[in-house]
Each structure stands twice: as C-alpha cells, then as structure tokens.
Length: 176
Image 1 (cartoon, one colour):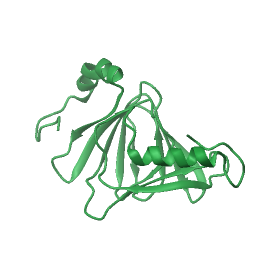
Image 2 (spheres, one colour; image 1 turned 180 degrees about the vertical axis):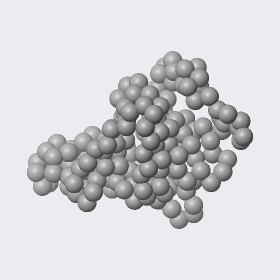
Image 3 (tube, one colour; image 1 turned 90 degrees about the vertical axis):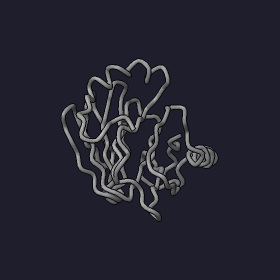
Image 4 (cartoon, helix red, strand yellow; image 1 turned 135 degrees about the vertical axis):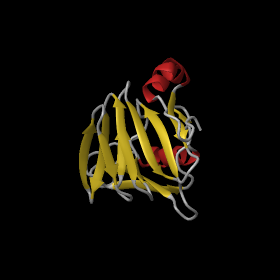
C-alpha cells in the first residue's frame, strides 16, 4: 500500500517521481490502495495483450495522462470509448472490456476486492468476426505487474491460440 488513510496522496508527483523507474522496470501496474474493500491501482501504457476482461465487480477509471482506449463488447458488437486526461468512466460488472493504453498513458482504476467465489474471466476474440476463441477463469484480482509478468494462464491460452492459428469462422489470424 502506498497511500495512507486520511492523508492526501499526490498522484501527479508520484507518477513524476517514478516515471523513469517504471519504464526501466517495465512496470505496468502498481497498487496504490488495498486496505479496505476496494483496490486502487495505477496502470501505465503500453498495454501488452488484447484479451477482454470480464470482472465480477464494477470498475471506475480515471484517466490521468495520455489516452485510454477502452474496447468493450455489447453482445458480439465491438465498441470503443476513448478517455482523455481528467475524464472518468464507470464500467458495470460483467461487461467484457479490453483497456488498451498507448505509451505515456496513466490510468487510475478503482474496484472492489474479490470475495470468495468471485472469479475474473478473460476471453480472446477474433479481431475480424468477434468469435470467442478462448476463455479462462482466474481469481485473486489485480496485483503489481511488470510488462514481462505473464500469468501462467495467459501463456497456456497463447499456446492454444498459436496451435489454432486462425479463426475457425473467418480464417483471420489469432490475436497472440
């Protein structure tokens, strides 16, 4: 935990103080607050993988610097919301979304900690026809992450996608 209750947290100063360190370490996520039923974390771009996350809790996004390209699905229809500095977005639970950040993008995300039995789902879809190519469930919620820290389940899915090679419906290459 970086932030202390009832003490102002200077987010801009924190980002400025750690910008180079994070770039050198390839850190993409840092937990700011986790000592309540909520998690608050800071993500930076670039975002390494195009999978869609389906969370069991609502999420709140606050764009600090750069842009956040939040791809999401309504049924099988792909949609996009672009957040710019100072903008916020409420994302209801269960909406498949893929936050994609270019280099220089910094986003604060607030969500509830996972309760027993709650799991996060991750899906990979065809970029052309939106067919679901793979899905996996994982528990635990967000942690501090480096760009090179690929969870084992992502590695497993990438192996399956490489073996698949192309979308069974439209023939487009798979997103690995």
